Amino acid sequence: MDKWKSEIQEYTVRENRGKPRIWLEGKRLEFAGFECGGRFEIGIEFVGGVEALVLVALPHGVGLLSDRARKVSGKNHRPIIDLSGGSCKPFNTGDKVKVLYSNDGVIVIKGAKE
Image: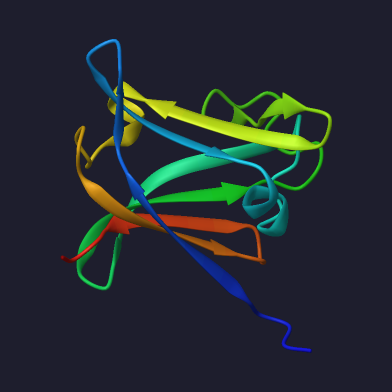
């Protein structure tokens, strides 16, 4: 069995109250190591020469006091990450993106080339 695996999801950035919104949930998040109640950090990185959002799961207990750490929502083992407004930069409503879920605790969201 291959230790490093990934899944790709094509997604269109939605809108909520006039602002862009990226909603991730379920088994793909679990696959990538994002659990209900867990913490993660988000940042903008250059991946393959283009801006991308990078979400990194934090080990249990890390980030509890950090103002940069965010919490994975959800219940009954159905994790949810809801990014909206400025958290979606560099993407806008209607943009097509690819979400790469890696089983090493990293999610990369980058623009999808048509």
